[in-house]
Length: 341
Image (cartoon, rainbow, N blue to C red; front, side, top):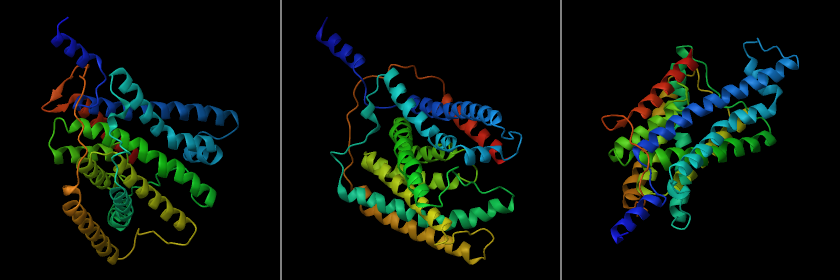
């Protein structure tokens, strides 16, 4: 075997450290379909158990009854998608010979200043979007009769519940979701699309997977911030920190609202709420622009030299867009419509 053949064999046989657009589309589709399938099985099993224990499973609010009666069902419902995300990442990488470290988390090259800045942005993003989303768009959805999506079956009215929410909603989802969306999907899309196309498309996919029209705008806007941070740093640790502090702030505000310490309810309030929402959002975007212009654009990005070779076929494309990604987006839109009815 010649030296050239040996090098080619090494390239093919070694694990790669990058994702392409085909990887991004397939991972997204799996992360959309599998939670639906697992959720259906979980619901069927729980309904069977509940029926055997005399619960009226014909009640239109039966799912809420299950949440109230079975804590394990509420916890499983919350963690289901996150567990699936991790399994998809590990199994997909194993099958396609991709290093688990390819998502881009780096503790060695992390900078304390950027980490603190990420936490700060995560906190102010809540305050910047809160009145805009809850006030302006919340009232808009309310006018059209769409119910407010509380987002979780878990309570948040005691310290114990608050700590449980911090773990299940504040810490675990940012890690799992960022590995998939910024670690796989964005990095894969970036191989075929321009910077801003990749950022906006990743944010759109992030919003669509929430499968709720009332929870579409916030994830989309937050997704732009998270993906821009990933683009300019190359370190997934920072989006995880931003996402983590964003979730923790939201959970804390909800806890304080449940305890009556704060009163956050903008539905049906006066015109000044709309003005305040625009002002808060403008201030937040001004802060983000300053950070982007004078810090992120000058930040030294972690660059990783691609290694290995993709072994799977590229699949069908419409232009640069894989057909599997289009199918995933279409399915997500259908689920949003079904959930809104």
